[in-house]
Image (cartoon, rainbow, N blue to C red; front, top):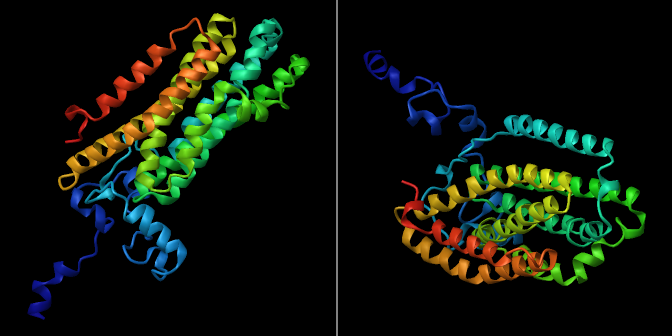
Length: 340
């Protein structure tokens, strides 16, 4: 009885999840529903399957044995600390905003006031873009499945949802433009434009190569640190500027609304890179590895931006867009970018 009394505190139940007890405080909603949720990260037999099972071999090769290493991937935190509940609250407001934009401009007969020249450019440079956005959505979905921790997985899930949302919006605008301008074959010519028009071919090559890069870390770098910033620079910022100059206020405002999603993706992507570079055991090797991936993927992205922007608006400075992307990538690997 004396022994039991002396050790009674050893058997006191925890008031919180064991992996959060070290924080010495009440866990946040984000910590409760986002951290340490993956049970499929076993080194030898992911998903509780034998090591000879093809699915296990895939995860071992392309996730567990990825050359980008960290001693604790579960320690990563989304800087926005989004959870499913808050993501839906935010996006509900964003969807209401976009709905209001579409309703207002439709009521003002916005599309009827566009010039024929600009409508032709929309058929070439805007509506086929749904295919490009869909490639980003597919890549993000793959990375959600291959992520080494649940906090990283959740970020990719939300990114995938963002992209599907904008694929739908481009499709909606395609239908509106088809109604107002039936002579331009909106809704019929987009696939051919994506597959054949010179302005899209470098983007198509970039994303097709990204989609078949199976290692989770290299695809993350190729997608979120190289390709997606290039896509945002060309299809959102550059296209928005061209739209504004051609009286297409609606498209300019839609691009700005889409950038809100893109900027959130950039925040957590850069935070994840910083986390990897800050690894006590692997930081320097990770920096060299990411630099090699930048060297591999950046020429494809820069060529895509040059081709698209140069074809869309030859009078605007597309070279400046490439210079800004290059400068940004260099900043990502600077000592100041490393998480403390």
